[in-house]
Image 1 (cartoon, rainbow, N blue to C red):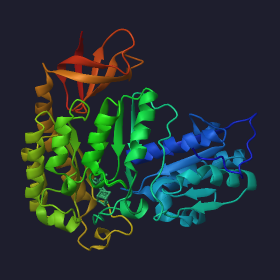
Image 2 (spheres, rainbow, N blue to C red):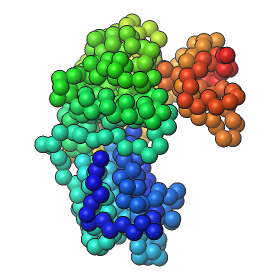
Image 3 (cartoon, rainbow, N blue to C red):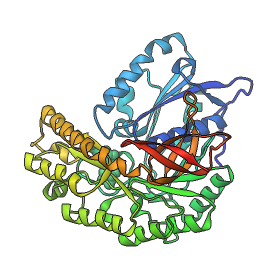
Image 4 (cartoon, helix red, strand yellow):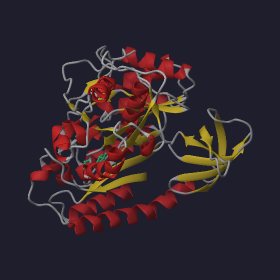
Amino acid sequence: MLDKPESFQTDMSHRDGVFISTYGCQMNVNDTERMYSLLEMVNYEPVNTPDQANLIIINSCSVREKPVHKVHSEVGRYRKMKEANPKLRIGVAGCVAQQEKKRLMEDMPIIDFVIGTDAIDQLPDVVGRVRDQGEKLVSAKFEHGKPYQIETLNRNPGVSTFVNITKGCDNFCTFCVVPFTRGRERSRSYAELVADVNTLTQRGVKEVTLLGQNVNSYKSVEGYDFGALLKGLATETDIQRIRYTTSHPKDFNRELVQIMQDHREKICEYVHLPVQAGNSEVLERMNRGYTREEYIEKAQMILDTMPGATLSTDIIVGFPGETEQQFEDTLSLLDIVPYESIYAFKYSPRPFTKAARWEDQLTEQEKSDRLQRLFDKHNEIAFGMAKKYEGQSLKVLVEGQDPETEKYYGRSTQNKTVYFEGTGDLTGQTVDVLIREAFPQTLRGRLLL
Ligand code: 5AD
Ligand code: SF4
């Protein structure tokens, strides 16, 4: 447990409101939860809107499209609030904070502090100094030498929650800013993770999603690799379901899929396997470490070894130099690998990255056209693929009840969101649902008793 910082003079009779706005990936969502938990320990109270807050933090993302601009415009919206409320402090966290550091404060003086991705645990101390001593602070150093030790902090973990297993990335894909904003890769210890998952289970959690930029390269101090971690969590803890994200195809092997298959009662039959492009030359320029053919072989191996599995992927269109023919290779991949969902993006140049410096950038129009063609193609396929679920009975972990329709919802092990009617309190239970209507993202069904 973290100690309350000395510099923080808490007045227990009054709790200041804190509002955090979150952009980007699950890593950021989890970091926001950690920030709220840390701030509650020093007497802050989460509030629902920024105008109720004496502390606003923008937890930023810089993986794609105009991230600094987004921070600027959000901070701009708080200008009037700050004039009206002298107690209001504004901070920026996340990847833009790490990337821009003190430049953010120089450009926007109403920002009081900037806190980097590796400095979150210093937040209570930073906020205390900013609030009580009126300091302006930038804390954005990487702790490269330190082991990655954190306990999951979650105020109300619910049925399903996230657990960080690695941080950072050493892959340096030529389009990606993450190695620069999240630093070198580090893994948490196996023993710490087992203890963490046990604690969460005791608090009622039924499903954990293990998080990392590249979970497959997990390597603990005790010598456990990712497969051993999955197997260990499946056999040594009482957690009912395990998911993970994100995988890197180059580190994904048969042994791991076999472990998933052997423990499929607990490890979900769903693999998010970002391909990024369907052409080997583009993949090489992206520094992805696999060819089109190797990727297809791995996808096939997953489906052969784990017959019930579903796949999804990330794709970038309009990477520098991508020709029409090369883009068509990405389109044709969709005919070969049965992706139930795709997350596709227009390439956007990112600071520090190699590809941003290349001269053969495509126009916005070319990128937009390709993105649209890709989505159109996937839509054609996805409806047909969803139909196979009609008439099937799926095991659904119930996550809650929609307050408007009163329908229960949860996810199947294939990561499909399922809606159905039911009575009593089903939240947290795993139930069988017969699917009656299937769409690409959601399924509707009837509870089987
Ligand atoms: N431009 C567009 N998409 C990107 N991604 C990462 N960097 C970029 C970029 N510069 C996408 C990749 C990655 C996902 C999280 O974001 O597809 O898998
Ligand atoms: Fe970025 Fe590549 Fe690392 Fe993923 S593996 S975080 S795309 S550098």
